[in-house]
Image: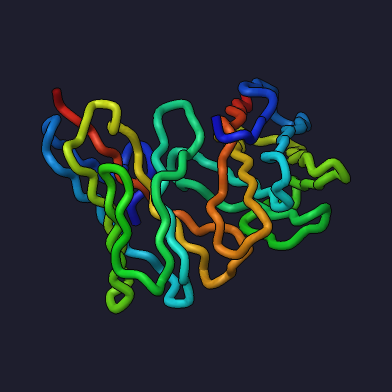
Length: 113
Length: 113
């Protein structure tokens, strides 16, 4: 168990809908990262938050947004969903020190039908 | 380029043999590297890391080698076991000490009993 919790584990929704994925980082970790993993793209970095503020953006679509709350949990919002958004979405967290490993949650499998 | 899933590079080894998984990283500014193991349906799991001031680091049954001259990383697994069957990813920090990791495409290790 990595200590990173993601909910829900599975999500099936229709095109055009909006969903929210939730992540609780390891206790004490200030950084939260969101990654998307699909069959043809590998693990793609979406966005990073550090202590409530956005720190870095990767290949995140404008239809997607995220936030990190004062209790450090994070949510990834996906809207106007398309079939191609079907993927595994992972959250990871890391500690405050430089060059520390990121610990991953078990992921949310999103299926858009 | 290579992709996770249908086009994932695969390494097949006999149980008890040693495995070597290779990775070419992309950013010469990267100074921190991690190997992750991902089993089916699970999130990536930290195996071992190495900083750029080292060429080699050993863990339990695993060794990581770093060649900065050619931007190459390898993971050696001794006495490979069926439980080692998974997809292995290398990741680099792109020179950012508290930033997101950049993942390679992954190699699928299959261990034959």
